[in-house]
Length: 470
Ligand SMILES: Cc1cc2nc3c(=O)[nH]c(=O)nc-3n(C[C@H](O)[C@H](O)[C@H](O)COP(=O)(O)OP(=O)(O)OC[C@H]3O[C@@H](n4cnc5c(N)ncnc54)[C@H](O)[C@@H]3O)c2cc1C
Image 1 (tube, rainbow, N blue to C red):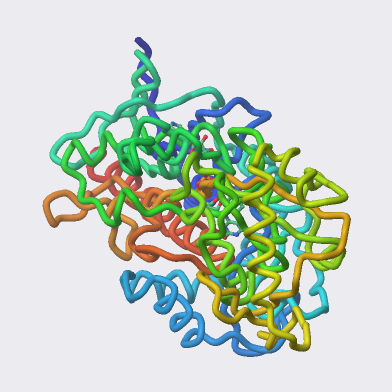
Image 2 (image 1 turned 135 degrees about the horizontal axis):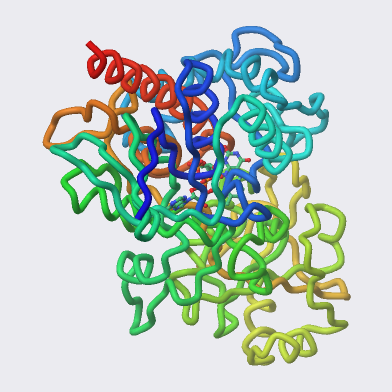
């Protein structure tokens, strides 16, 4: 067993951890960052991200028009159904107005705004090169500033004294510090925990068929440890951000390219070749995040997005090509579905499509009549070969259960903030995001609270040092 001493130890290696480490170091603390992943896989879910949601009152560098604090707050209130702490949410929103300058100082680059109907350049700043480039820049900057970084260093427990951090353990190794930031993500990669949280539907352990869109290293070890040690929790363990992704995606780290965006242009059927939800309920960017849960509720947690030749070129092509066939029976056979059942489902749907003016950029009048479930928009008969299908599985982005924190990012024990233990990123995002999601807010929360946690941890450490030498 070795004993090491730092001012601040940061646990995790994603966006929140790096923001915390950089800020703690800038505030004059000696910092050690412990990342569970090997160097090649560093960066957690953050390496898969593309953008950050930012408030602004007027056009700003890569952001067009205005996205004022109040509009951002109302968007957040709406998607969370009010399950959000307004003080903490507004703190994160306000930080998003000026954090980009700090990010640039640490090597971040942003993409110039895009044009087109579905672009997000009013609300979201896109990282040039994506989250991987952003994280690489942060690691480079951290190294240059003298942050010590260790990979393949999963922390399995902490030593606490009445809610005060004393040391972190990597296996048998004890690492002491004056303050600590936990930024070790959610628990979505922990299959046993996901199994317990989601339980069984019709005798099936639904989580056994989940794919994880991000890192395999977010096992929730410290989230579990801290809750068991008396830290207050927020959020619901059964809540996860889950989208429908291609069933052929890898179990971990498929990232954004495995998402299937063809749903609203055709129909979605389950293993029995039956439809189960309105594919045209609303614009796809507003609906994609409900489809992971919808597929999870189907037998075997599998479904198929079926389109015809008319849809090609109207959605972002996913990384895997669609299963292609010249007829519906041939398509059914390729998918292992009952051909007669698929033909029946498509025939019922085709008959129910009422004539209208198809326009995928608006909520058009192409709807079904007398069909259950209905398709409310973009309903056109599937009648033009070749036909295509994409197999779908629930793709879990992240979980919502987290640690309760205050505006200083301090972890709470029995109603009282810890004097030197802070949390940032997904491990505390549930304070702001009790459920639901709006694109780019994960990085807003991680950046704001990472910066706060790092600064507070450095201040606590330096205060502790001053007390010790007095
Ligand atoms: C495919 C995908 C796309 C996304 N796109 C966006 C987007 O464009 N915009 C957006 O805002 N959000 C996006 N998100 C959500 C976003 O990734 C998260 O909100 C954000 O990255 C959380 O940052 P974090 O630092 O808390 O967690 P992570 O980036 O997941 O980092 C957690 C880190 O902790 C480490 N770790 C875990 N346990 C331990 C341990 N015991 N000891 C040491 N280290 C440990 C992990 O290895 C990892 O490095 C996306 C997520 C996914 C999966």
